[in-house]
Image 1 (cartoon, rainbow, N blue to C red):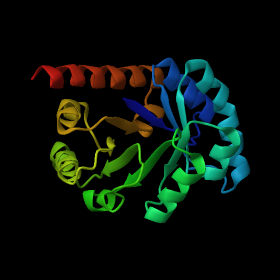
Image 2: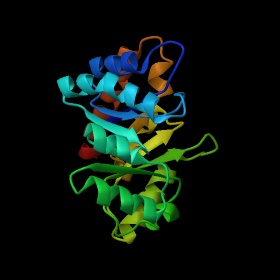
Image 3: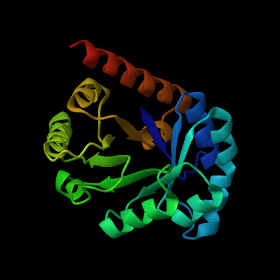
Length: 208
């Protein structure tokens, strides 16, 4: 699974970004407030711009942090940067069982703090200082599994395509990207290559 996180840039509008990644085959869009004016109107305008595209392509649309806006526009769900139990519980209670709920965490310990809550996925970022990308995620997945906590893990950060098979084998469900696409010379082609790489990795992981 490839998830695209929007980013405001000088090259493209958010709607243009979403159009390109969907043309490339991505069907999981997360609307970020990064680069937008710090008010709800800018997020609402950006969401409205891409809602019809998402419906036409039957893509999931997730909005970051703004539970009110998710309720108002009735998109698929929310991604929470605030990983406190109280905030995550509030999001689930307000949006209901059918909403997609993602949470950003930085470690297994932070994820385990949320054990018992109804969370669909974690985005966990492996930073530039991470020398063993596959080992980083394998360790997290094992610690969560040992605690009987089964939540989809979406990898993010400085990840090479050569790591894809190892990530899938380690138990990651997918990859979240942004600049890898928006800064590419050909964003549509970059999207297709990432999706193809993930599909090849999944097939390889399943046969070994």
